[in-house]
Length: 198
Length: 422
Image 1 (tube, chains in turn orange, brown):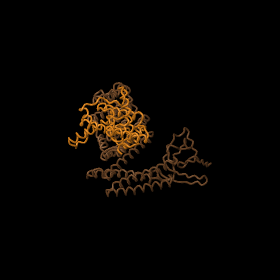
Image 2 (cartoon, helix red, strand yellow; image 1 turned 180 degrees about the vertical axis):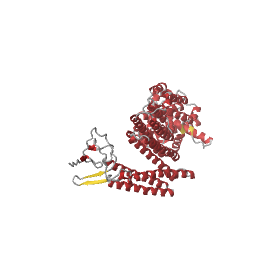
Image 3 (cartoon, chains in turn blue, yellow; image 1 turned 90 degrees about the horizontal axis):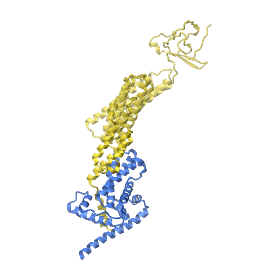
Image 4 (spheres, chains in turn green, yellow; image 1 turned 45 degrees about the vertical axis):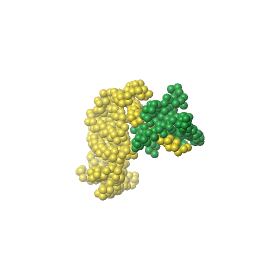
């Protein structure tokens, strides 16, 4: 895997160029992860920047040999950074931030597939919006695990490493998370339908 | 879980950060890293401390990023000061030499492009050779010159080693074109450096103290040159570098030139080996001569391969031949060194103080006869005495030269045997 190779190179050479390449590979997924947690683009950008800077500082001071799995390290740092962020704002993690305006929402969500025509894009955007909303409503730990397993498509092992849990615990948690999300998604549909009926 | 939901979740993967933000954040990150690295490479205190105070990383976000990058670079430059340009002329031992080396290190640290970094180290090796040329022209004492040359040589060896490593890395990580480009530069330059080094030090025969270092440096440069050319050939043969007529011609020429240089070496060693005569150990002589003979054969194979445009075999054989010649040279040199100093002209042994200019009456003092030796075997004492007629440096005759004829010796021998005739 290219990432593995680059990371091994980074360990051997501490070449900033290599770190830059790794940044290119991971920046979007870390941004995404944080964005789903904090819900706002600007904060997500700032915090993502922090994560990479902290990672470099860490590598520079401690030597990259201490990091086994860069991806896991980045995600763990991201989690901690978000926790620190909320603490500094004196808020609990679960409290949603003020909702973004529609403008802000569309600006944050850059859908890369330019081949799609406009109608498809709009549909896709609203689908995503739905799921995103449902995701926001469930518990943080459920949200996290769904992001890691289904959006970032990580293995159970990796997910366990990032969350600091056993693989068994991860499976159980995942099962519950999925159930919660399903419920939330269904509830929205019912609510919608009810609105039409009445 | 309904497939619809899964599908939608996976769709969320398409969310990405804004392109402009990614770009500017990356630039910011890189400038931060450069800042970090320069902290490690310069020992200039104040610029470093200043930048830590002025640019604590959390504050960075508030500052316009491109501007911040510029300011960091300015801090670096100011830190070294205007004396950097003056230090460029410094030689080992000069006050500004340390600054010269430090500013070179800064340049190296700020060069992130692998290709440029490799080229830079080749240039720095060249600077060390130039320094040696200048040291040679100095009016210093031999001792001082030797010291200075040793310093420059040590640094040269460092640079060449780094060049080797950089080339290896390039080979593993960069495009073949970049690798070949750098390998060619290395091949050209190391040949130049070797020539310069030999010239500079040939004219300084009394620099025995630096001889070992110089030989090691030549060796290292040679090996690096071989490795570089091997890479060029490899890439060419693999077809990863565009096979234009010109590029093939170029590689053929390079390999041809290398074979010629090796041929000179083989000839030189051959001459050395065939010049070995007693008292040098005949067994060693034989081995040396056979080895150099082998070298010639392999070199012939290299030429053949070159004619067939079989580049890898040609180069491999050529380098093999060179190795054989080296081994032969080593055997020959060691064998000569192992012989006790029979031919030391100034050593007249116990006969010093007396007039011992008498030479072997059998031999006349002509150039041709200088190589004639007379061997005498004494079975009683199991010694082999070899008489080599050379002109003896006559010590000044004592005030009252009382010459006892019985002490006059024939030629020079190690084991003095007073033969009293009366």
